[in-house]
Image 1 (tube, rainbow, N blue to C red):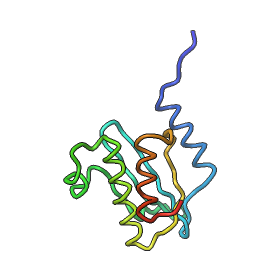
Image 2 (cartoon, rainbow, N blue to C red):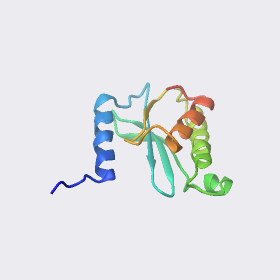
Image 3 (cartoon, rainbow, N blue to C red):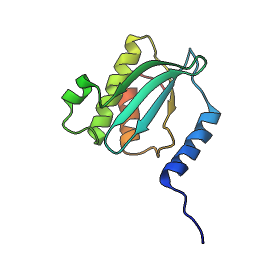
Image 4 (cartoon, rainbow, N blue to C red):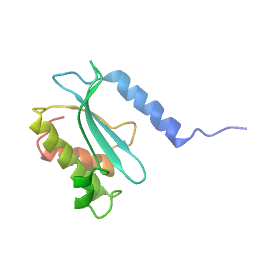
Length: 122
């Protein structure tokens, strides 16, 4: 009998294909996004040394206090603004966007567009 592969396994496989194509450098770090059913996480990573330069999530107190729900498109857009502001404060202007194997729509798209509007280039 044919066994269907789980959504998580499919997403992880897509993510590895994406990660093999690019990585973050000191000049252009990687903006990695992870979405769970209830929260979103974004971090800017320099892959040459394996350091997280900037991180933000809907679990942070200052972000969570501004949001009514942490699992909506509006929350993702707000998180995009927060991560872009933190990155610009650290002097990071250009990044490589890593959608983490998720489809570029909904929350992922809202986060990316909000980060672009706030000043990040990718």
